[in-house]
Length: 306
Ligand SMILES: Nc1ncnc2c1ncn2[C@@H]1O[C@H](COP(=O)(O)OP(=O)(O)OP(=O)(O)O)[C@@H](O)[C@H]1O
Ligand SMILES: [Mg+2]
Image 1: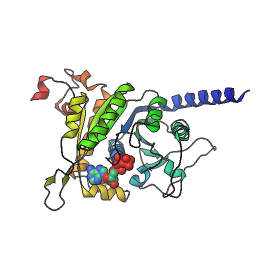
Image 2: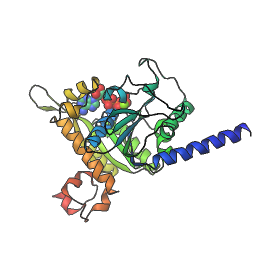
Image 3: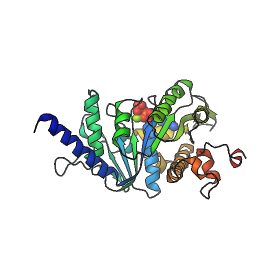
Image 4: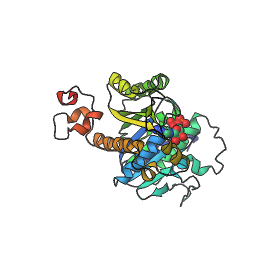
């Protein structure tokens, strides 16, 4: 067999394996943003925890190969990858109902840079999709680096039946500009946009409780309205959120009543209901249409205006 033939066979085998593994997973959601540092990993990790709290089986796939932070935020960065047969990788179990795979588990030195070009990254992500024993999951949440490049394209094009994207932005103009690119990227790839999340939406002062619009407020809703896509909600800036993430603790568990925890849980509820019923516009006028759905609905129906 020629080299070309054998590599074509390998690709075919891998595609088949990806299809089999992904067919066991309910909803596959990619979290994106054109801009760095706006809270993609924060949203991914906390939505995953919130969905696991609701009793769902959840997996996280970290495709941020150059700056993988998922494991650190989940407090499992010391874990290492195991492969019983030298090929299949076992995801790291974070808690009941929550597992994760990240390149950081394969690189013991957290300060070592990953210096890879596109093809290496594409191959690694495809391995994370096809060679990992994900098992049966309700949700697979995919964290991504900033931008609309190899990582996002590989995940979207390799995962059959991708449910849609969640786009994270902060309210300020530069972030919105970049988030708009993720909106258009999703549209170009015919990927459903589940909704936009406005993160870092006002800083809640830990002393007086007043809200300081550090990066402005309301830009996420404006972008959702302009792009005619659902809006999932806003998360304020809170010191407890950052502190918990820095120490690998779950803000939802440590500070369940904080405004950011409440916001994250309500976004998880919306994500759950909106992905259950398909396009939000589908449930207008049906018994699934309820006031709780309004925030994720892009219709102009009269009940929404009340
Ligand atoms: N609402 C918030 N309140 C307080 N801190 C936050 C909030 N959202 C994110 N952070 C903190 O801001 C930092 C950046 O967030 P995060 O890593 O989630 O962003 P990112 O978009 O994934 O970044 P990157 O583009 O580097 O992957 C983290 O330290 C995180 O804990
Ligand atoms: Mg990140």
